[in-house]
Image 1 (cartoon, rainbow over the protein chains, first blue to last red):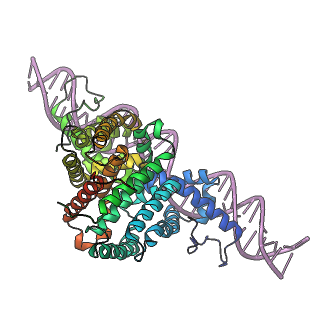
Image 2 (cartoon, each protein chain N blue to C red; image 1 turned 45 degrees about the vertical axis):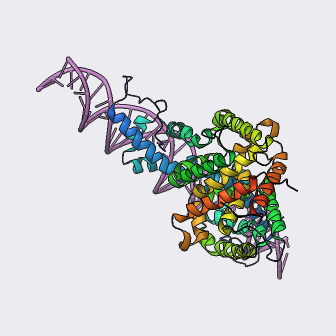
Image 3 (cartoon, rainbow over the protein chains, first blue to last red; image 1 turned 30 degrees about the horizontal axis):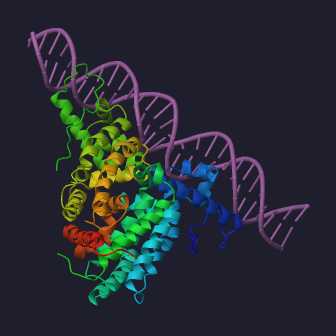
Length: 225
Length: 225
DNA sequence: GGATAATTTGACCGATTGGTAAACATTACA
DNA sequence: TGTAATGTTTACCAATCGGTCAAATTATCC
């Protein structure tokens, strides 16, 4: 699970007339995006300031703006870098696999992401929650296409009786929401569980429950009322 | 379903030396909180500005600050007003009722709230997502107590075999997350469903799916692997 | 109708916002 | 080692931020 995707170069520094990126550029952009992830995921785009990011990144504001010309550019670069990896688990959804096992492992992967990459989850949650002003195209384009494709897989499973007949889109939504909940609403989950269950064991418990819920709820034994 | 709860008075205007609240006070505070709900739910606390709220409320900033002395006070008042009502559906959860029917109706109610009061949902989502700096006490106090109580109910149901044995806390989390998803991640849901299914029918579809999932997943027929 | 309290507004404040200009420092490379 | 490109910093800018103030306006009540 590696979030440092090898996507396209993020932005080209103003002063860079050469096309090659220097070692310093790599390092500093890495450093900045790491800090930006911290800040944007915690406060959303509007609520975050360049000064905050600069402080977390341990560099001066103008220096930061040397690598990313605007706050928007930083946000853009961050989203581009994270989005592809974020959709990996869904992409791994295999039409030829065993439906029960595919769903189970999809839930597991998504839960692992919520546990290991909560900032990435919150980055998107903040963005979508506030109307997705910067990722509308990604949602309507690549995301929709991927979901459409996988929804077709699920529909086929239902049609052939491998799982119960159900709306594949809402099934996917429910897996997204239940798993990401443990990243996005972490403080609430901790507060409700209390100190007794605040340990990392909650992810195990969640995994157990969600598998129980989804496997049981989708088993093709009987029809619904 | 009335969100204008009859809670304690929000704040007392600086200039108000009388204890009685005037008609104008009622109206203006109402007007301000309505605008504040619009703005805070869309941008979170940090991302919102008093000027924005004043503009939406159709009054000058100093006038707004005459009724609520600070941005925090407005946010506080808004949360106090909405929180109690927001937890109604869970409170209605009846230990003596039929488990299947109670869960079904809880899901329905929560989905109706997501449909009819998406701003309220997003207000809390923004707050929790950003670390719940203003509602930590509410989460650890009243919310936890309520959930603890209802979790005990669910645990009893499981013990007596009325539903499958499962973790009651994670069950509640999963109902919260799946239903609120349709308010908090509305733009994403619309984008993925596309124009074909973007109509209000998606709430019906969601209700159907979620009932199928939860009723099927919790039915006490068999044990889990 | 007049006094008094309640409400509203424009002008303003210091701090913070996103971002710039230019001098300065460092690196890479011939 | 010199020099040109790259990287960093200090000082600064206009706009916006949360919030104040005093003066003006309006509602209330005798």
